[in-house]
Length: 101
Image (cartoon, rainbow, N blue to C red; front, top):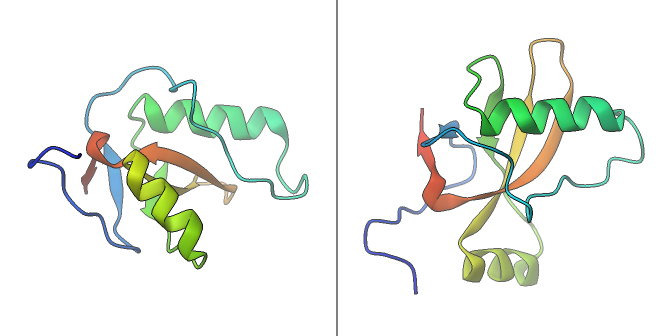
């Protein structure tokens, strides 16, 4: 069960990390059929979790109800990350570790 202080982040909410740190081992990015190189994906993911303000992050809407429920049970959300150059990836992040920005 989630803590009472856990908030529900709705799709489209711009977010940032509460406590900067390393990338969690369970956090992974969605496959984009190699539109973005692996090194750029790693860099964007690391920048986001380290709290870099250059990376824009937004909670995504998940159309698949089963995937949405599975993530909700784990207390996670899908977050779209975008850097100033325009590269965009989707990663999984813990909803408790995010705050609206």
